[in-house]
Amino acid sequence: MDKRKVILAYRRGFITMQECAQILGIDSAAILGFVNDPQFAEVSRKRTKQPVNG
Image 1: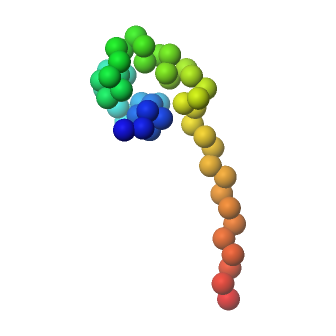
Image 2: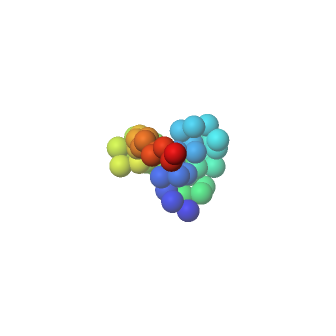
């Protein structure tokens, strides 16, 4: 599973810190390093305009 998705699920409150650490295979103390890492920050999605057919 993609680490970014697991961390995002933790940040959004879908899973606990312990569950996140278990999925990633690390201890709960090490999870804080991943959560605070900018590499795993949520990327804002830009919306693109869809052409109007008609």
